[in-house]
Amino acid sequence: MLPVPVAREIAAQVIPMEPALADGGRIVIMLSDRTRERALERMRADFVANASHELRTPLASLIGFIETLRGRPRKTGRPAPASSASWPSSPSACAG
Image (cartoon, rainbow, N blue to C red; front, side, top):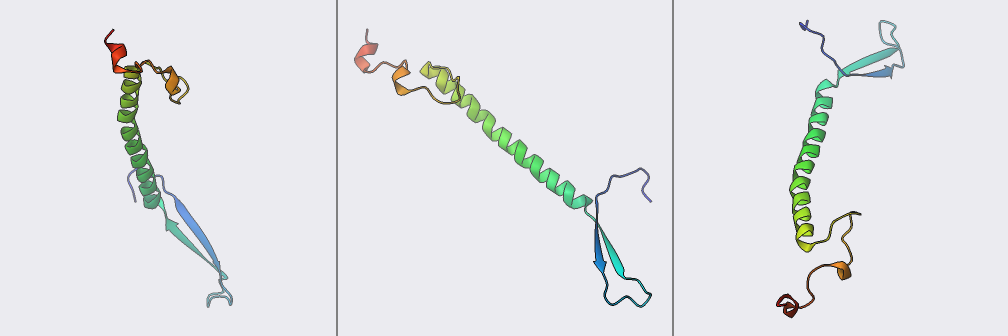
C-alpha cells in the first residue's frame, strides 16, 4: 500500500467470453495502469512546448532588432512594403 494517495489512470477493457468460462463467468475485465504512459506523453508535450518557445524567443529578438534598424515598426505581423523603407535608394544619397 502507498503511504499517500496517488492519482492513477486506469484503462478497463471488457472481453465477452463465448462460451462461458469453466466457473460460469461470461466476461473478463482487464485493467491496465496507464499512469506512466500518460506522464510520458505530458513530459514529451511539455518538452516540445519549451523547446519551441526557446527557439522562437531569440528569433523574435532578432526580427525586432532588424526592423528597428530598418526603421519600420512591425504592427500587423507582416513586413511593410519595400516602398515604405527608410533606407536611401542610392549610396550618393547618404553623402548629403
